[in-house]
Amino acid sequence: MSRRRKMFQCGHKGYGQICHRCLQEEVGENEKKEKKRSWHDSFAFDPIDLKSLPSHVVLKARNIINGLQDRRNYREFGGKRLRHNRLVISIPVTRNYRMLCFEEDGVLQPKEVLSHEDYNICKPGS
Ligand SMILES: [Zn+2]
Image 1 (cartoon, protein in one colour):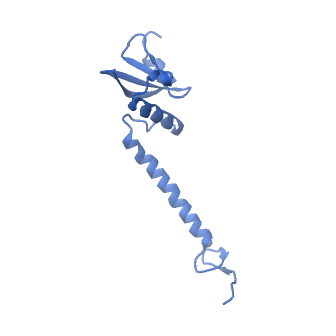
Image 2 (image 1 turned 120 degrees about the vertical axis):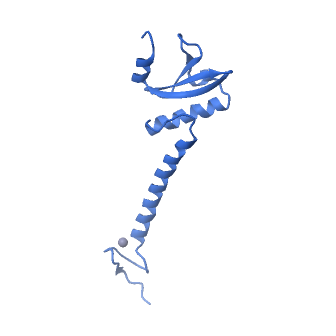
Image 3 (image 1 turned 90 degrees about the vertical axis):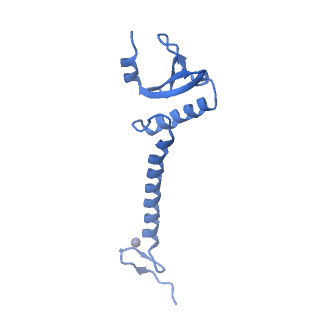
């Protein structure tokens, strides 16, 4: 049998029984869907809601949350106690986002991630 290029129903040309270009595209689509789904599912594991944040902020926030769960000191992440409430610790996530944590029995519990604007609004006396 000769290896002749043929035209598939989709309009692509190639060898064999199935169009490899379409097959590859389909695999790519499935991978994209799978990635999207696993990204969506990953939020179920976060102790606080990170869904509304940009993805790079989500990843940095998770890095900090993991660090705190490993009992690393908030100062390692540049965190500071708030002057007006010593039980609240503010940790910079990115230039525009900070994570607020509450200290409970010596353990830091992440409470929320705020954008710089939200943070300044809820900060009394500023
Ligand atoms: Zn094709």
